[in-house]
Every structure is written in C-alpha cells, then in structure tokens.
Amino acid sequence: MAASGVSEEESEKALLLDELIEFVDDHNESVCAAKVAVTLKRQRDEEASATARRLAMKTLGEDQERSPKANV
Image (cartoon, helix red, strand yellow):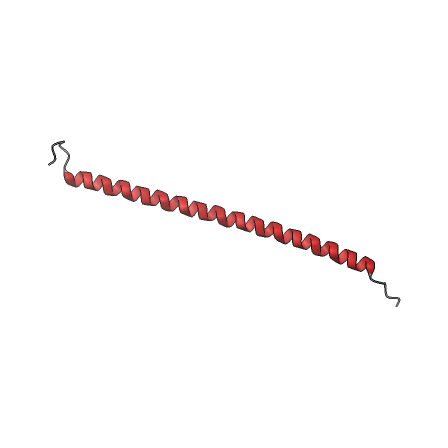
C-alpha cells in the first residue's frame, strides 16, 4: 500500500480506465467529425450537380431557340 492508503493497483486501474475513456472520447469525436465531413461533401456534390443540371437545361434551351425548325 502506498503512503496515501490507496493501493498502487487501484491507482493503476484508475489511470488505465481514464486513458480508456479518453480513447473512446477521441474515437467518438473523430467518427462524428468524419460524419460531418461526409455530409458536407454530399451537400457540395448535390449543389454542384444541381448547378450543372440548371446550366445544361439553360444551354439546351438556348440551342433549341437558335436551331432552325424543321418543316415536315
């Protein structure tokens, strides 16, 4: 027993548990950050796709206005 009255084994156990809690907390934070990053990337991709679709539709409309209409 240590002079403080707490066994060294208990102190080591508490330190290991504290370290384990830190690892779990760090892991949870990194998983959460990864989910946020994926969500933000998905949003940016969706916005880019929507912009590309709008531009394509606008360009298609302009092309159809410029092309001569076929007389059938």
